[in-house]
Image 1: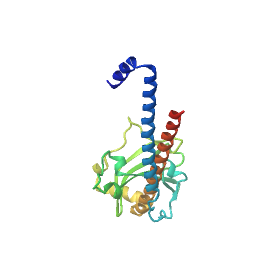
Image 2: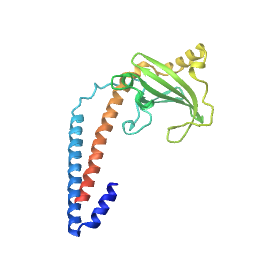
Image 3: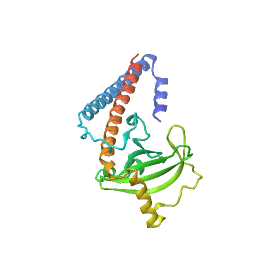
Image 4: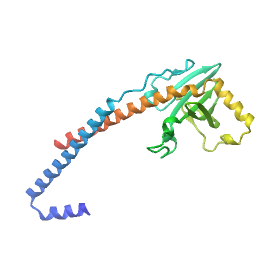
Length: 225
């Protein structure tokens, strides 16, 4: 409707009036861009002043994966005998949309781990999805997944991923808990992974403000030409 009214008005108005309207529209657009750029800069500066959490080292058996802060892959890895163990982490809110409201700290104190245990020459890796808390670790599921070259996991949507963990008998559940605990996957990882996520999210937020600001600024420069 707005476009139609503008079009009809342009037909009735002289050419010089159309030029004046275009200039007015450009001025308004530039003003909006300037306001947005100021807001982005203010938030960027505010976020940049936030104090990072105390530096925490991972348990000695694990090393931090190079480039993990800039990617979405594993954060920690280690070898255990002839096995390679990779651990990825995310918050509750990244797993369950809407999980954890403003007054709900579950997304801060409950982390989700993807634990991948692989062996050389094996096409499959044993994959654990775990909930990690400050004082405990729980297994949600255990499955075999196909490995691919870039070390990410590809799940076969038509394959059988095993029974629900809760359907297993107590002895089997205890044995699987012992299996990953023996490999150092336990609550001792929590402090490091929580601090690591804070740093990663802070870094991503800073990058977002800067990238959006750069886009708006370039857009503003193009319109003023």
